[in-house]
Length: 115
Ligand code: AMP
Ligand code: ZN
View (cartoon, protein in one colour):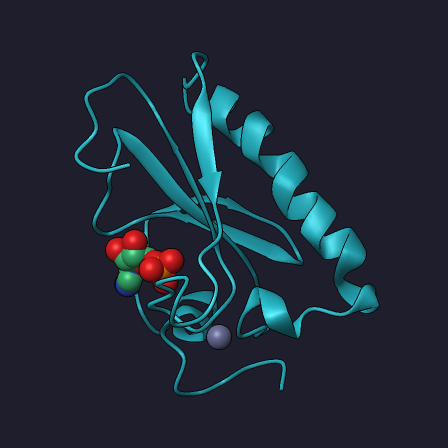
């Protein structure tokens, strides 16, 4: 399934739920987390619906590489030049709340509220 009509992040991709976008291209969308842990906290998501990291296959290798490679570029553009954290929660024990693959990227001066 490339789009899940019940998925909150698919709705953000489709523009049915508003978001504060930081980057967009044909494959990826980046928006600011609604409940940030850090001064800058964005979520990098594939536009296609992939539920968790367990659900990726070899066809997603390039997509995953692009998600990771985008993080430092975007952080620099957002003024984060002193380091950042990247985090992907997977499944229940990984404390994944939204079942659409996303990478948290958090940075900015400390203290942070979490993490
Ligand atoms: P996770 O626990 O890794 O699934 O994290 C899901 C993240 O999505 C949390 O940090 C939420 O604050 C964030 N989130 C949930 N709904 C929205 C939304 N509508 N816009 C932006 N961020 C959201
Ligand atoms: Zn989705």
